[in-house]
Length: 137
Image (cartoon, one colour):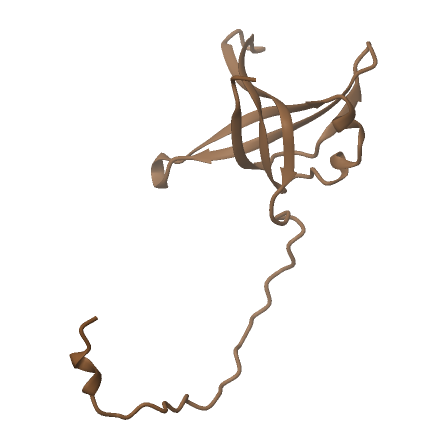
């Protein structure tokens, strides 16, 4: 494969698994990738398809909205006519790799107000004088 596109992103909606009329299994998921910084930041949506035996397992149970994933595969761009008659394009990735990265944002527990315990000040075992100022580094 000469066209390899790899990125990390956040799943936009739960993965779907279906079987084509010729009997092949395909797992489809849409992944958002943020590019740029600040006011110029944009979100690019990539439609990801995983085919065959890799799509038949239990991976779809873990590919839920908000989960961060690493995706790698062959990227293509498809143009289509929208319902309003405009020509649109979508990025599609025929995936070789889909790996879970980190925790799902939906699965993270609510943060509790953490108050660290107050402890006694740390006592230094070094002398209080400034004889260390003449060290050459």
